[in-house]
Image (cartoon, each protein chain N blue to C red):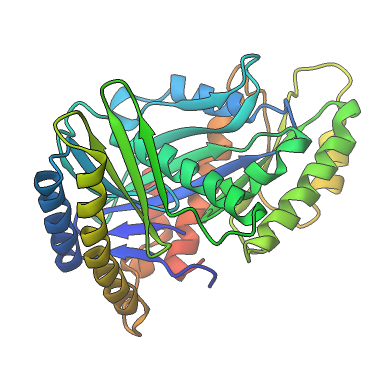
Length: 160
Length: 196
């Protein structure tokens, strides 16, 4: 197996959601979300109702992948932090544990310094949670819920 | 690498459309986008040049329905087909769960098809995947054009391992959903086996 399967359980999800919720407040951010490196959205918090988080997640992962590619060419390990400054909105992107991406969107109510400070702390917490999650996933007996699906279940998906 | 989320009760898989430049990868996604219920799809994103050539990728999130209480979501991506975008192609293959190879049936594009399959094999291997193991289907596109190779010829050159293959005219939708269903099915079957 090249990449261990990404699995999210309720317990870890709640821990992650707590970190993300807190970061929105502590950093005065508009939106905070976490994406895995393949572009799957893991958790989001803040003013997400009017935001296409699925698309943002995919583009963030593409961005990190492209930057990672550039790093490799320069014989750098990673460019772990990115910052994009707009007229109203700014985006701070942080690679956490080389596995997930923490994205903070903020406006003039916050500042880059504050966001960086809070992101650093949140990254450490997230890193611990994801390490524990990874261990749990790799434990024997952590079967895929899909082991039991039948060919019929799969066929039924396509019968409409 | 699929992502199983017990909290949201959903499973996310990544499918990549591969093939030589102008073979119709983006057209496949556009057709799927146009013909899918609004509540089953997200926005389609195309990172393209000013002349509408794919620069980095196209992206289309799709919801296919539920299996045993889990929503199945597929993220469809295309790669840029032009030869010099190889670095970008490698990035998009990361974490892939299933691959569709879109071949251009025109006689003049046979070599481009072969080069692209070889490139796919090499780039997958770099990520630690084998083309012979990953869920994989082939679409022979542009069957409506003059001067095309026969399906038998294309199959011999591009599909020696006999994976599921389909004739397509992506512009009008022929074969588009058959191709998608086939690869989605293979991906789910692989999940059932506990891979990749």
